[in-house]
Image (cartoon, rainbow, N blue to C red; front, side, top):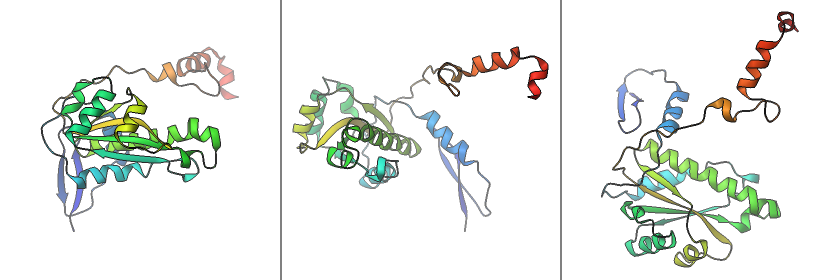
Length: 221
């Protein structure tokens, strides 16, 4: 049976088949998908089928959650009128309308607060849904689709539009579709600007400076 290997990534993907197993660096595959993901605000006029959407959402349920309560709900929106209403609730971000699909990620507060109470409602539930959203973004990228994570909207308006019960809180709108743009890589911080060891302030740079300042004999202690 032939083995399929992902040879190229980003916007140019190709599957090649080999009759024998080929060693693949799994880290490189995952890391490349992470690095190639971009926020997409322009989409092709091309439908996304249910099978693809469900495959992407299936990745969401493998996200970690506090106590494995999985306090997330996802509402898939394709209807043009509903999308237009959601754009209005998002303070008129008209670029969203080019996306054929919206996925509205919500927190089920009954599940989020079931065991952990207020901390589950105010922190754990948000963390859990955010982790699930990241899985969605990466799964979409791996399948050649683009996404944007929209957080600026009126929660009450979105709740009314989507008929959410009082215990379901909308927390993000994800636009989904085939990208019609290739945004440039963002400017990112260096590791030594935000990574600390053992205590805040012990950065990579500071640690290296301290190490270099030590007398030679100290290196053997």
